[in-house]
Amino acid sequence: MTGLSGSLGVSSLLLLEFRQSVRLQIRLHLNDRSKGFPQTEGQQMLNDFQIDLNAGLLTTIPVDWAAVHQRAEALSTAHTISSGHRLADILHVATALHLGVTEFLTFDSNQKKLAQAEGLRVPV
Image (tube, rainbow, N blue to C red; front, side, top):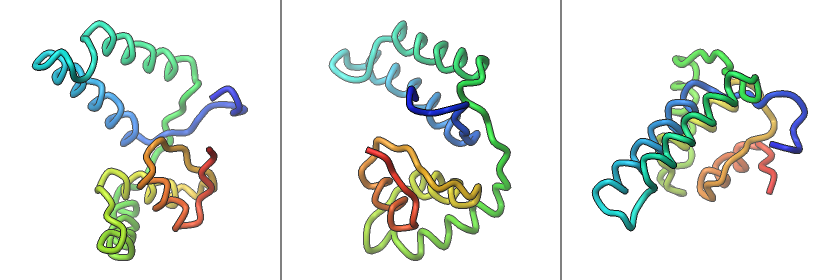
């Protein structure tokens, strides 16, 4: 984030996935203290995320979801059998392609492979 100029454009899918992932990690920790993270930590992550949105560090970009789903179907056909991709990864890459971005940020190695296979630059 420190290397970016301006705000980081994100889709509503990314917002939903982040929030859902944090909530799931809280639940995992409630059921097994060796997994996930405590509720106070998770809630702080959600609060910080909302602060970033409110401050304009993240900007939600409108997306034509029907077009993204069509693109995702093509990606799934082209890549899933040979490389094994989860639907969420395909949807994120399809969204990026639909929006015409050239750079894709991810911490997921399989998602990175898909993005690169589709010509997106993925910084280290």
